[in-house]
Image (cartoon, rainbow, N blue to C red; front, top):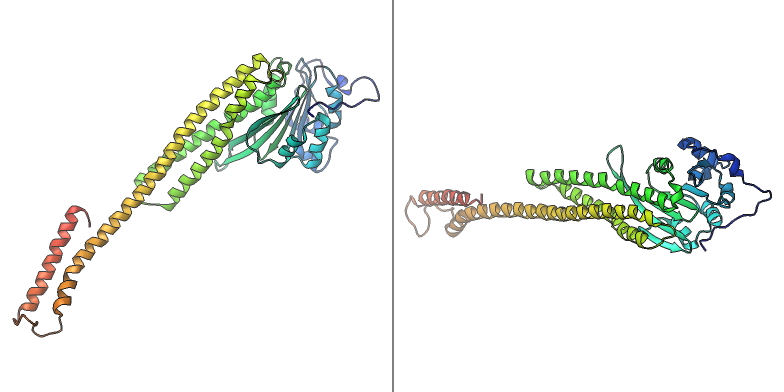
Length: 369
């Protein structure tokens, strides 16, 4: 598996030869998508975002899916296909066109994959997780990008990602002799764009943590603060789970797969490795701060509870004095038994009141009330 399936043609020549201009032809996203999927209708048209063919001279044009095999027969040609949440039928068609492995195709369709790098014959299968801040609400949206990389093709399958791949493609097409450097170049640009999206997300996490820390120390216990801390920590773990595996992926790409990643491209993946390593260090520090913030919040809750218990114990001690005296003598007699003095009642009542006042000030002084 992994080899490119090539179709025989009824007539000599190539339909792409007449389509490709002598200079770089860059079309808009709408035009590119329309050309690539113009022959399709209905649901499949929405799943095919773009399909472009390139020459060594970086000349680009949009092609239809049925023309992929003919383009791959040409020496020095390269095909970049973007799919958005394709169904089983479309993936099966692409498997036949590019000779993709069954297991990789199954992973691309099912999604919910961890970031990884797998090799199937002469094809690489890379899973990347995206993390982006939405324009409205500033919520973090996690998605997946699956990349099939062959010597003459690159297929991206996105799930839940809002990353603008048109900008990524334009960046590749604007680079001099970009595609002549092999499939490692577009793979680098995609990976670099995804990693660049992690930084604003991490910055947003840091700003939210600073606000929550201020709420912890400036106000009394608020259950919402603890819930927000937990949600922030959960999102941090998701971001870390998306970024950390890229260390192993970039390390493997810089040491192995020399056919796909030539020597001059390895420096670029090493740069991504350093970027992810710095991000991981920042995330580790922030995760420790989140754990500490949650611990401090719970400690402050315990302190508040202890203060309440102290107040209750103080008032209990004050009420214990009259309870003890009144329960001993009772107050239903004209003259108190054992104290046959008509002033025994007011004297006893005054003693109780003075004792309670003295105990109140004493507890107030030590901070129990």
